Length: 390
Image 1 (cartoon, rainbow, N blue to C red):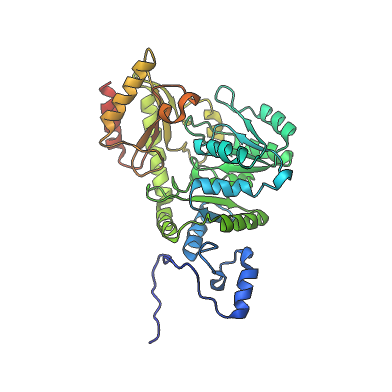
Image 2 (cartoon, rainbow, N blue to C red; image 1 turned 90 degrees about the vertical axis):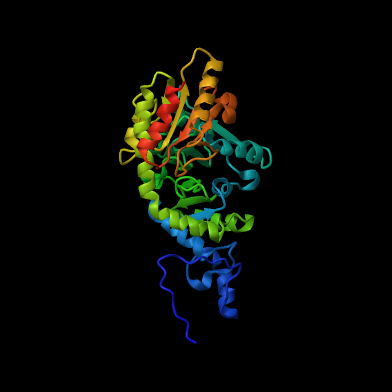
């Protein structure tokens, strides 16, 4: 019986471990030309190398980031590992320079893996009074001359907006590549590759997927040589994303624009209100004029959005009073706003900063709020009712 083609609007879920090859000659070609990362059917060999469902999701992300290629991995950390590891060349590895206001998991990776186990010469660059000085950055990079510079567009948890455009200009002036973690900004607010960044990474777990039900990472770029190196690294260390997660991601990417716009809109309104509340101390949100990197955010970020993260602390006479307010707030909203250690979910979630970051951010009443895309009036009522109880 003749097979009929199913005209599904969705990419099929290919759970195959290996794919059928045609004959001996095409088999040999498939393996010898595999590194070219072609998408012809005969080039699919083994799902650890490449999988059609994963490729379909990669192509959707390429549209969002406006890039020549995207490589999906099992997590944001595996994306970071892949992105930086291709720059390691044994004893001849040049120094690597990381901005300090980056994801805590990245910092732990630097300390526990890059320094301790691989012996990489790591240097860091820190903000002064909440702002990165580009003058000091140029002095640092001219002295170190690293193989690459690694920065986040919007940092976690104080939402420091880095001047990515200037970082790229200065880094390239001294021959350094630039890797940008664009997780918080997303391609909606900024596409660093358009500014000349060499590599962009995301924890796709967060806003790209946006539903809190998969773990994934992605690396994006335009340099074909870097792509080949990363395809090879991903293959040999087993960082490939599973077909099932890629299938869900591909579906969730269809609503990316709508989701993130609503999250950013909710966050902007909420931040303005919170900034006027007496029970609340400092509100960290790049869209507020009070934020130290507001000017950079206005110049850099697009569409009038400033992200969907808000960090705030409670007013109080001492640390104990602030902690009591923090704990009372968390308890009051717990039926609706859950304490969950991630971000970018559909519904608003929170994390107490002191419990995770400890002495790095010493404000005892500080909370990081990941604002969702739920109905704003309902979200506002939940938070305002809790604040009024304090």
